Image (cartoon, rainbow, N blue to C red; front, side):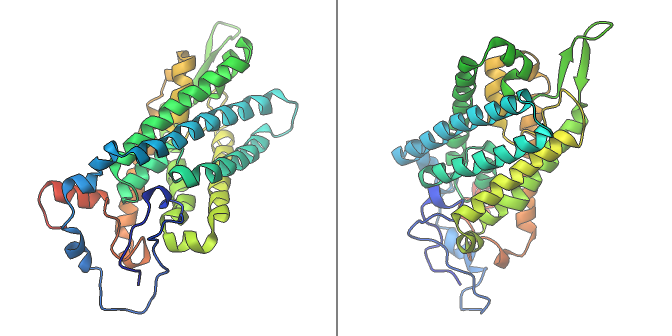
Length: 327
C-alpha cells in the first residue's frame, strides 16, 4: 500500500503536487496494515490539529494565499473580458467560442498557481478540499477570503478599462439570474426562475467536482496523468459546463452557472444593482454540491479512494474529535 508518510505538503496535495511525502500508487495486494488502523493512527491528533488552527499563524499559508488572491484577480479579469469581447465581436455561436477560451484561460492559470498554493482559485475547490480533508478547514477559509478579495480586485481592474456603457450592458461579466430591459409597455424582467438557477448551480458544480477535481483528489490518478493533463481536463470540464448552462436554458438575462462564488461576489460588490438579485444562489448551490460530493466520497469503498489512512482533516473525523468520539 502507501508509505507511512501519507500526507505531504498540503499546498500541493490537491493536484498531486511534488511534496516530499506523496502517496504512492495503490497496490491491490493486501498487507499487514488495514483500513482499521486509521483510527489508531489518527487518535493522537488534537482537535486543533484536525481543524488546522496553526494554519492561521503560519506565514507560509498566508504567503500561499497570495497566490490565490492574485490568481483569482487575474481569473476574474480574464474571464469577464472574454465574456464581453466574445459577445461584442461579430461571431457565430459566441457561447461556444467563449467556453473554449474560458477552458484555455483556466488551464493556464491553474498551472501558474498550482506550485504556489495548490491551484484552487475557487471557493468551491477550497471548501470541497477542506471537507474531504486534503487541506484543513482553516486553510480553506484563508484561501476563500483571499479568493473573494482577489475577485474584487479583478472586477475593479475590469471596471477601470471598460467604458461605462460596456460595464452597464454586460454587468462587468458578473453572475446574473435576470436583467431588466426596456419593453414596448415599460421595463421587462428577463431571465431564469430562481429554482431553475439553483438546480443548475447545484448540478453543474457537482459535475465539475465529480468529473474533473475527482482526478486531482486521487493522488494515484493525478500522478499517473500528470499536472498538465489533469488541469487541462479541469479547464475543459468547466468550459463545457459554461457552454451547457448558457445555452440549455435559452434565457436572456441568465449568465449561466457561476460555479465560483468569489467571481460572482467580486462583480456584484463592484457593479451592484441587479447583480445582488438571487446572488445567494451562487453560494448556496455550490455549497450543497460540495456537501453532496463529500457524502459521495464517504459512500464509495475507502480502499479505492484517497490514501490508505485517509486525510487527517476529513470533516467526519473533525466532528467526531470535537464530540470526543472514537475516530
